[in-house]
Image (cartoon, rainbow, N blue to C red; front, side, top):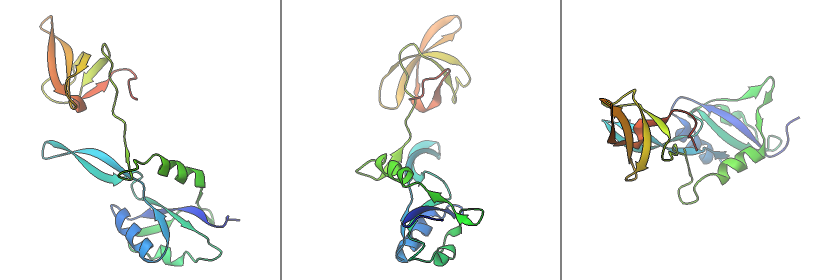
Length: 174
């Protein structure tokens, strides 16, 4: 038996989450699409893009005793209402509430936390001329640039690189 006024999980067509959300709201349904501000590389530069937190999935709040979900299945952008057997997949209300509480109040977006590096952490360089080398994190100079120590030609050399080119070698993700 499904509880009244529950949250359900919808699956959208690829890259159609926002379209599906718009059409659900136009039909009077209460839907929720958690979104994420995600860095992406475009033409060699890093830019922030707004992407769904769960690609191809949205949440729908409905009372199935008062509201037919038949219209949801034929909504533009929706592929299906997720089911387990013959029952719709009900999402615990606390899950949706927790997601909403983790959004930034000003933008309504989620942010992925970047790795935190402390002086002395061992890091690996992922891109650029020093790709694959390991070094020691020294300090963050500006918002996006860091200073690391590399062993080059039997000497410790300070190198400035973009922070997004580093990954912690062990742990370090905050």
